[in-house]
Amino acid sequence: MPHIKVKPFETHSIDALLVKDDRFVFRALSQRACEGKHEELIGLHYEGETFVLQIKKRAESYLIKPDSISRPLDVNRIKRALALFAELLGLTIVHANIALSSEKHALAETANKRIRDFEAPVFSREKIAIEVGFGSGRHLLYQAVQHPDTLFIGIEIHTPSAQQVLKQIALQGIENIWIVNYDARLLLEMMPSNSCSDIYVHFPVPWDKKPHRRVISERFLQESLRVLVPQGRLELRTDSDNYYRYALETFSAAPKAHFTVEKNSEIAITSKYEDRWRAQEKDIYTVTVVCENFSECKVIDFDFDFDAQKLKTPSAERFPTKSAVYDGFFIHFEKCFMMQSEKGLLVKVSFGSFDRPEHKYLLLQGGAARYYPQDPVKTETNYRAHQQIGEYLYG
Image 1 (cartoon, rainbow, N blue to C red):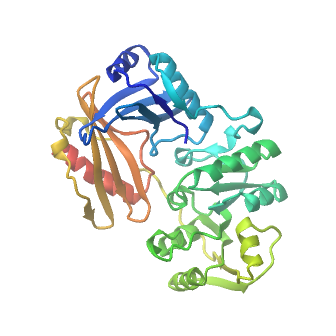
Image 2: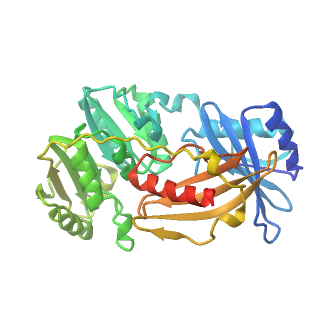
Image 3: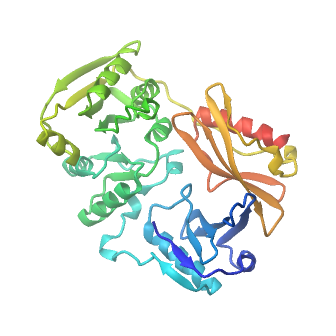
């Protein structure tokens, strides 16, 4: 993780940057300081990315690093932002992890897509396939080279894996892959109906002790069948006996389903995980679900704005400290930060679906409220949670 450690400095000097440099959005101070450990957040818009820097104060040094909610996928961009921050404030760096990676391993910028790109997507190919959790990317890269007429959308929540595959795309000059570093279950809800020929889910984490975290679920199956074209395929490959049986049970629960099961079938390209399991002589199961119906178009038209006329004066006491559970969603206000340059509040909040929650900041400032760094994914569950969040803001 890129970071810098600097000698303690007067953080109120950042306020001057907020006035003269529009790349700096806000400075917010944590309300909860215990054992001498204080935290500040800096909002930053840099090289087309909007994200947050954390300042964790210790007696000997201050640690400055990107916040996990808004961390850009391009590590070099983060490193340049940290270097700029230190330079503008004249900070004394004690330790740093911001050496730029070699340019020959640059990320494929055009292949790096954000979740908001799918609100009104313009696809570069007529035929589309999705791979969920591509890991090393071996299967994804192979398929893209073999099928140049198809756009392959690779979805991977593990940031280092997404970064490595973006480098491979650039090195190999592949032009028919998009990479999305996000939760596949949320992105699937953004995809147009009847748009994909194939959805691959190869060797997902079994989550035997936390089955609610499994990517395969009844909801995932419903969304997959909506997104697939008639005769399109959802393909699951797993070495886990438990996951295999769970998938069969899930697929069998659908009102109508056409699926096939294979054991130890050969495919053209295998992942490093499959190579490992085969070396251990483990059984490999393939469960394929075929879409048989044409789905109605899905309209994504949710408004995540707040009504400025209804907003009450920002106050930390307005937000409960415990999670609030509702029918089909939850809301958890985690931390409150006081804005330093202008009276206001920054609230860290998790909300939405229990198995695929959103993590955002609420920026309450100047008589307005908005999500930071961007609006939630446009799903019905998120919108219902948004409406309830509004009730807290409106009092």
